[in-house]
Amino acid sequence: AQPTYEKALNELNKAEASVVQAQEAYENSLKSLEELKEQQAVATLAYTQAQEDLSNAKLELQQYQGVLRDLEAQQAEQQRQEALQEQVAKEQQRLEREAKQNQTLVASATSADKTPGLQQLSFSKQKEQPKAQALTHSEPRKTKQVAKAPESLPQTGEQRSIWLTIIGLFMAVGAISFKNKRRKNN
Image (cartoon, rainbow, N blue to C red; front, side, top):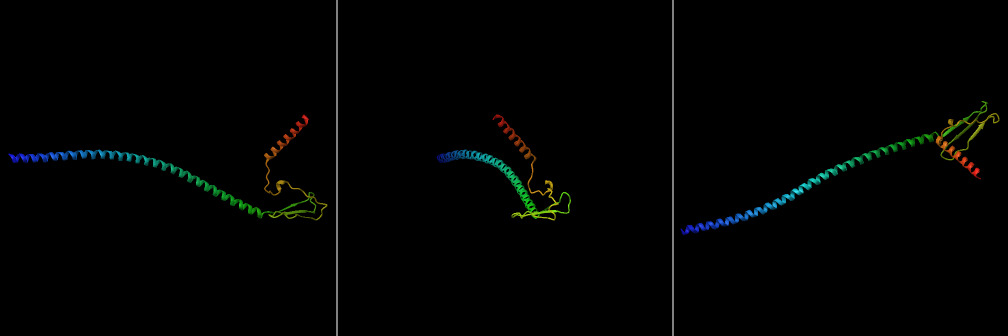
């Protein structure tokens, strides 16, 4: 019975050692499980933060796309304005060229009594100084120069404004009434 007892004691010691090892392995597993849970919590937090960052980045991207669309629209409008200004400048240059071509003007005046003597007044406008006007007539005593109405004369760029005339009249009336008041006071 002694060998069986020793054998059983050895088996018991082995079993106790196995239990101790199993207990240590179990405790190590619990520690590992806790560490994994902590890592999972950190990973979940990082994942949630990454989703938030992605959402914010998408919103920011949409805002930048809106700003980009606005800038593109402004640029298109600016290009349209520049093209329009260029077209206006070209048209102005064309009109200036036509005006230079038409700078030589001839005006003639006839006598009021339709006598055979005619006066001819010719002049030309040039970029340089205007030349002296040539006045030719056959019978100076029988003719007289007739002034034409302003509407029939060529337009030289000077424009009238009815409002400027009205303002000038009001200013003149005001100056006269002011002068009359000063006279009465003195």
